[in-house]
Length: 415
Image: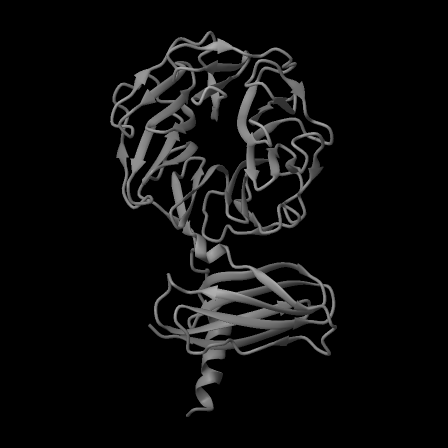
């Protein structure tokens, strides 16, 4: 019987893998809405919708409450957080502020252009904060009093269709970046008083989002992702592994992990500052991802018409370590250790030639529960850790596929 069981497990796996795979992304109860923006403030998760206003969750998306009291425009494009102040930019009524976690909202001072697509908060030299609003057609506005009044600060902007704003720490003070539709990126070193073009190397100038990861600045554009390692002086494409020609609508950062939301191909992840990307979209039924954010232990995605989705970060933030560059004599998949395990285990494998490699974990019925590797790999010996804290006890199968090589082994999670 001991010799028959492993055979039965593998046979069950081979038959079951022809069935639909288990969804790794889970749709929250906020479905059927067009999510444009997401933010996190303390323990609250907020989403802004196109036509439905603002929703708040205190439990990472398990349940939602509409929080639109005082909001006269329910087309919401952007959020910003400054201490106890939460700001929202709308499409036609300017900026609103809440001082009670979204329970109620009040309009801020009048903007000469009320179509606000981007917001950002930056410390200023006086010990306070500056609030910036990016408008579609007039450029950037600045407020030094939490939105009570606004000043247009667009000198030097040759394109005033602002879709993204980002603050970047500098050796002295802060740098402010603005992403435009059709004009690339602009930089201000003096809190928006003046701007200079910072688009050298950008081959696509329709900028949808900006994000800071360590000392690197990323721009998601209609032509993919670009990275700057020198404060916007120059940019290089960072698209390896992303679907060619597909616009990237959103970016999010969690530690050393960078996530990109695309217009039609779901979510991708990079662990090496955009050098390579791997798909992380299993289970998403709507792959147009307008917004991404990290909330607690979850990655949150806002889609075009299907509302909000979430996925545990532990499922998609495994890192692969190259133990040796010595050429193995053969492809190999080793038994995990420890085994049985709780809650994490290590899997090692060997690659003899450059191969597109996948390492996936399945239930005994063939339902996929984790993708640990999904990229082209060079020859060498590797190991990867799987954290199964969100999975139940039982027998799991892990399968390595590298080129024409395929091998499957089983492991046991005991709680």
